[in-house]
Length: 196
Image (cartoon, rainbow, N blue to C red; front, top):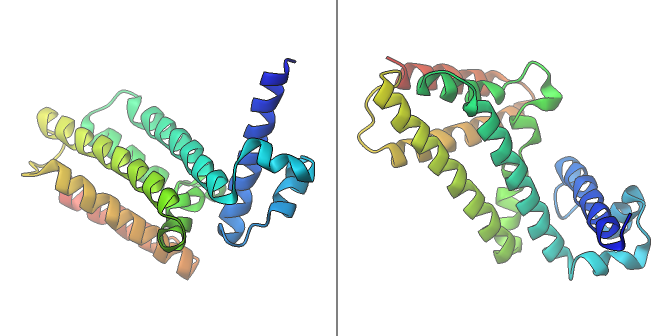
């Protein structure tokens, strides 16, 4: 394996390990020592891959957003009406296998409040990622209105933002209460508001 490829593999391993640690402990709760030990990377190597912990945080969020949007595109890319595809995405927030549900693996849920005051660069990365997702939701609403599977939305962009906010809040409440009731309530409300 070339040095360049090994470097990319090591960087990806640090990011993957970092994501798991951040999901468990928050960004501030992850120390570089633990991150590198769990990644199997020598102590002094961190700064070869990232100029600072904040740069690592930005890279972690960029990597997460890329994989999240790929998962979104895969979920809604399967055949079906706009409404069916929209509900497929929101149903994935409440996966039967809790370890794979969007709500349980969401770094936006875990980090939005923490990093908004901690790092402007990380906040901007996360905000841009959320904007990309909301734009995709808006497009899905438009497609659903066009094919008749979603009720007319006077402003699909605003409706998409409200939907995402509702689901983000439901995910936070589900995390707080340690049960899925808020997510099920959000799904029922989404169905009632959007589907004819």
